[in-house]
Image (cartoon, rainbow, N blue to C red; front, side):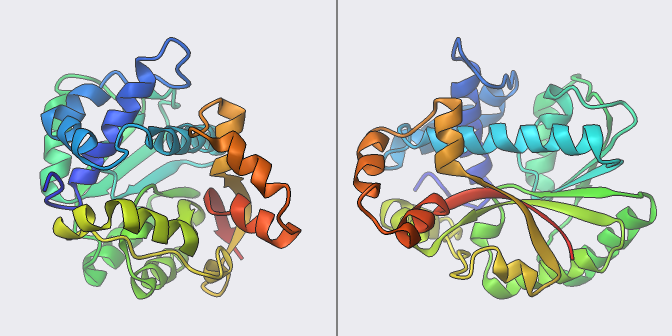
Length: 283
């Protein structure tokens, strides 16, 4: 199977960033994505069912995360971005971030070392630090958060493409540890619904499970799951609506929209929230 470890999903998504970057009407440009994805990333996209046609969702997610990061950093006094399970994200190098901003990537040693070796002499636009850590180790995680919190006033947390691979208990523990640090003020996540989780599992479940990266987290209560842990929904960006705004809708979306007109309001809202990018804030 092309996916042998959860870190391989970073190469998978990097291919989608490269695909978008190479379009004449690209919403973002990641000049490093193709090289970071490598042959392994191309193999994953080529081998997975609907590997290419599903690029739209990851492209939308990337762009919306970009917009949120730039808005938060630009207007809300954020002095540090903490990117958990950063993978092959190259935002410190490709976004016009202020030089005064601190950016901390956290991930397993192999993926971080590979990224930095591949980027070579490229210079980030802000102050950058790579931290090698296993975020499933609670002691390591809490020590890291305490250290980061002590050197910052307002921190923006990113967990892009992470939570879906964790159990409910894992996500609750992470949310609790983040809340324990007063300077951790905002948290940006991507969130799937149970319906979407079932669809993804039918398409890619076997491939993901073979790489010890099964899909897990899709709380029936949606963002209320986090409210019980001290984090409230500040903004919800529906992937479906953002795809329409960005002109990156999946094929046959017009048919889904047409059929949706005949659904009751409750089901239309469920469909709208099938997938989204969420900004959480401390309660």
